[in-house]
Length: 64
Image (cartoon, rainbow, N blue to C red; front, side, top):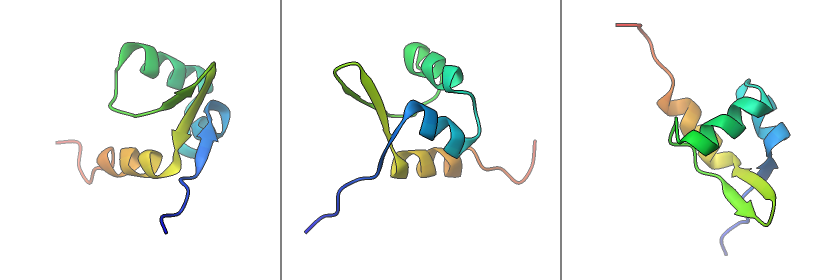
């Protein structure tokens, strides 16, 4: 049996990755980063595993 994904609201997701909630709203509306979100009615939710993958993709060892 597959476990349920952990879903975070925009405020929780922004705390988790260290950006402002409004920044996530801008990213979602402009498509600036490939960060999936779930829209249920007016609610915007983020899967914790998607946030972890986003952080992994944005992890670098050099600025070159």
